Length: 161
Image (cartoon, rainbow, N blue to C red; front, side):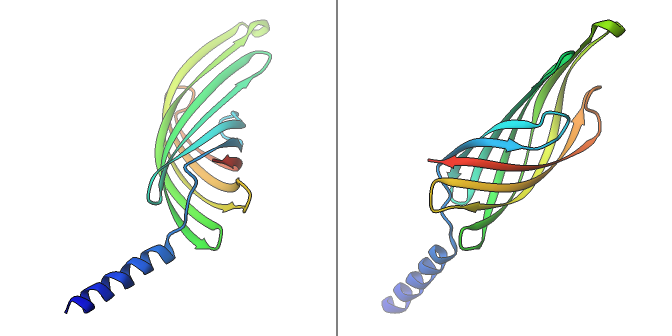
């Protein structure tokens, strides 16, 4: 009976490790997208154990008569597709601020907003500490400046450590 229990335990342990992929403890890089005019974001990912991680993104934008920032935080689940390919899905939210100062036209406005976001994407981890990903992030905004549904598609490049 002991041999049967040990054999069953060994089989389930091996199956668990065969299907598990290893994600980096930390990754930092750039997320190149086009949501709400914020374009490029600095992105950081932190493994939380198992196949889960936290992603934090900071985007900012400045121009002649405007500036703004947006901070997003997402909790993600990661699943292995094949080899070094993974796909992931997540939920989260964030906040942002936008200021418009159009002096020639006499327009001056600023707004702080919050948003809820979802996230789904695919990533490839190279043998070197490089991670490329492509993701889709719908955002539901709450505020005068950002009060609707926005879609963001982005390409990310990250250094893993």
